[in-house]
Length: 444
Image 1 (cartoon, rainbow, N blue to C red):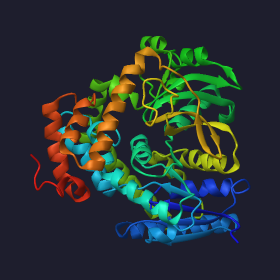
Image 2: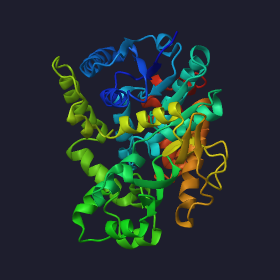
Image 3: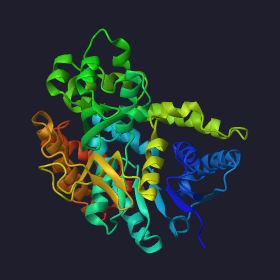
Image 4: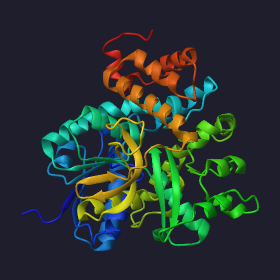
């Protein structure tokens, strides 16, 4: 008879895996995990073994009865799983670097989940996640799918629209990072802070901020916009906004809003950084090489602090907290990506949104907010239109739909430019986009 939970982690060779293992160890008293299966593909075998052996040493040090399995057999990992977590990157870091570099040639921001980079990451990722869903239907039909793979909102919506998996939740570390930043700013424990979130993945806004259940939005806006408060500005995501703008907006933007609302400055910054240090993908590639050298140390049996530079801070806290709340029916409030079901007015009920939810054993229950504040409503709907077109292009391999998606995106906003970028990026990622090339031998 089964006595504990089986977790299957797809993309188990990721540098983030020690974060996840640490989370399961810390919460073992409320989440009785007995098996963790780390699965990857042949190209990721070496990394899987390195990070998997570190995971085994971490579990051994904890003294907990958790078995860690390393495999390239997705079926074995999925068979009988209770929770499936996804953290994979189709095309690995080389694909991300192309996503960043090619748009920059056209003077457009190259970024992992926004603009052309976000579109092409979605085009590569969505067919793979749908394959995983079909396998889950067969081998673990009752499992929860917890998706951390970017672009998390689009991936979650693709599952909701194009698979039979109902038990899916998308997760991002940006909202919890914003909560942590506010907690540091106020010098209080994170458990005392709650933010009402609503929007889309990487397009989410803090509508209100609470300390011990009391709204402190005015105080937080005042601290964020006080030019004398230099320490506060360093700590708050999206620092560098014009105080007048934030005072009038009266919302907390997430860091990714800078790409859309400070496009000129961000384009210049990304271009300059690409020339000086390389693109973010190139920087992360070097960081990962250093991390995996650390992970190889047979004496290392804890998550190294250097992992926080990788950009996934609080991942395990967010992921394992969510899994525990689903399993234990905690009914606490967490920001996740889930089916809208009318929570945000003006967005289709079946679309994925990122919103504060009550987390129950039956899934997240979004806390309805109605209309978003008028200054941001249009931008959110524009990005949702981009996401819808991108998802359809990913599923169908429709070239025209890919051009439409990129034209809608505010970072491009030109059909001629969109077509040029789509053509070059389709060719660059040809290996991972069979849905486009099986129908057509060449790009028009």
